[in-house]
Length: 184
Image (tube, rainbow, N blue to C red; front, side, top):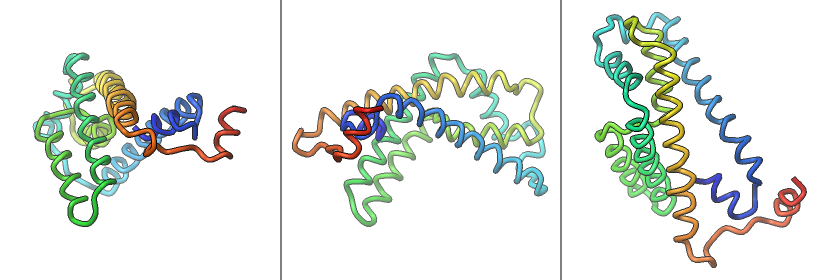
């Protein structure tokens, strides 16, 4: 959503946006795996048996059909972006309430978020998981969910909010960034 705003406002280029997206995705993946490894190496026994609900959920997520994952990813990020959008426009306890209800809706609905899934998958991977739980399944989920999350964040929410905002209220890039964008 915010990268779309940056491109539309002229403060970043399309190239910069497409460079930032994989960097942040990979950074989140590395962070998720690192935390799960630390937990595992520290003797964490959160998932000692492969029949735990966490392993069952992780396995179900990795075997879901591609289009189901894609649309659950799009719907999820719609709610995540809505939570951020509402939180930016409220103060105090209203901020918490805005975030809480949107995130509760996405969790209760069983929607898919690539970053949340990275952590779930990493924790399950380092636990005592079944042989049916594979890296190929994890990749399948993350591919389709990421595409759905990206479409929703960039197009539905990013462009939607950009064009819904009156022109007078839209962000304007400063001259430094406009010059840099034109040159880059």
